[in-house]
Image (cartoon, rainbow, N blue to C red; front, top):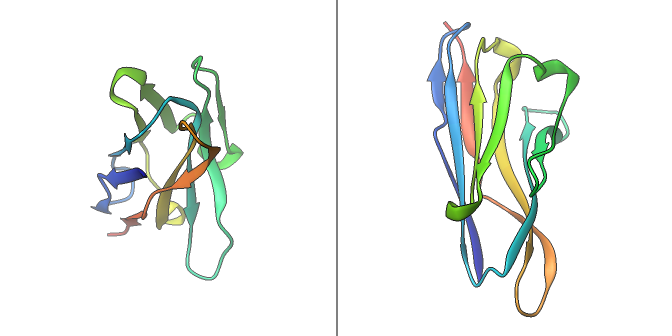
Length: 119
């Protein structure tokens, strides 16, 4: 079994920062792309940022210059550093990873962590 566990969400004031972490565990042979998605109330889930196993990154336009995605391959962990947070960043944030096990290659999701940006 493979598990993704997120941490680091919370309440922060506008202009503040948070760092999300997502650790993958289980019978993992290799992890390809890892990414962060978010879903605000009443809206569809959207891609925030993605990073390949080689370190190439891609960001949603709305977070470029404010968010930074990184990963530690030795720890099977992906991070999302969020700076200059805005109220519109409020959402549940989900980690996703394309993971190869002995038997399958597929995407896995974490359980989500809530981020609230408010005074």
